[in-house]
Each structure stands twice: as structure tokens, then as C-alpha cells.
Image (cartoon, rainbow, N blue to C red; front, side, top):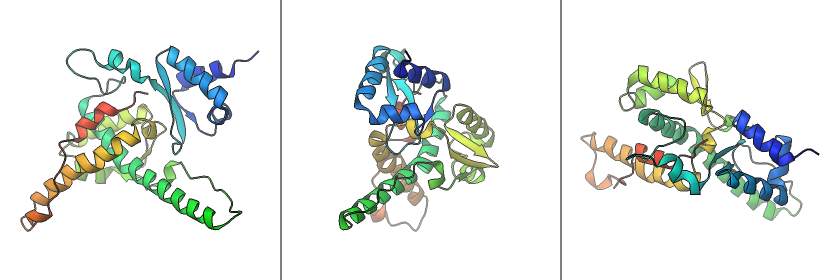
Length: 239
């Protein structure tokens, strides 16, 4: 007799991610009994399912209880189990902020609007919220270099790191355009990181840019958090 849960776990480990519309994935996400069985088996191996209602893919990651054992060796806390360097992880955070944050905002806004319309129409048709990378315009590599080149190691280093992130499935590169890869929306805990990026790292960058302008009124400067882009790397989900 076929073991659906075991087959799904094996596929996730072998393929690293699966689309949300995969038949076995859909069954697990809608069947509470199957989901409980999957979560139990993954937890027994120190793993957990990485999924988000707005993400187009699912994957497996290290369970919270095992994070310290996996990442807490030595004096430093490893950002992931992929041996990503500090500047590679910083670039990953930047790309997540450029591609996933605006996508999520549009998804949430659309759902709120449709929920309001449903309340006004007794028999309104439910429409699925789009989850693909096409929701947000891709990032131009030249623009990325111009905006962040001096902070992320220069052109050669960024190009090398983009290749690394592409190989790991975080991004997709096509004709000097960077799009969201299968793992980018699963790499960070959105609820924990979104506020830190927007109110911390981005606020710091905005305040620094304002300070560089001589005509900026000090009264309008933002009071940034101490959180920086590199700090948010500690909250990446290992995939």
C-alpha cells in the first residue's frame, strides 16, 4: 500500500521544493489528518514544513527546537545551512525586500478588497489570490548594482552572489532581470521579518540618505531602529 505522506516527504527532500498546486501537496494542505501526520513525521526528524498561504511553493526546513543544535555552533550563529557568506545573505535580504514585500502587500490588499466585496454580494464568486512571481516586476540587475553595489561588495561580488542564489533556487535570472525563485518566499518568516526590514533596515537607509542631503530638515528625519540588513539574516528559514 502506498504511503502518501512518506512519498511526499521523500519528494520534498529530493526536489527541495514542490509547487503548491501539486496533487499531493494540495491534499496535505486541505486534509487536517494528513497534515497532522506529515507534521508529526517531519518533527520526528527535526524538520518542519515551510509553507505560506500566499507562497507558490512548499519546502522543508529545520524545526525551531533543533535550530540551536544546527546553527549555534561556535561563537557565531549560522544564517542558514547552505553556507552562505554574510554578503550573500545580505543580498538575499535585499532581494526578498524588493520582490516578496511588495508582492505580499498586493496580495493582502487584494484579499481585503475581495472580502469586502463578498460581504456586499451574497453570492459573490470566490477568486484565488495570485501567488506567482508575475505579481511584481522583476529587479533589473543594473539597477541593483547602482543602488547597492557599494554596500554589497561591488559588481563582481554581487554577480557571483546572484549566481549562488540562483543555483539554490532563491531567484531566477533571465536577461539581466531577477525574479522570485521557488524558495525566496519561504526563506524568511514574513510575520517576524517584514516589520524589522521596513521599520529597521529600510528606515536606516532612508535616514542615512536624508542625512546626506544638505537641504534636509532635521525635524523630518526618521528615527531608525538598530536593526540592519545583516541582523535580519539570523531569522532566515533554512531550506
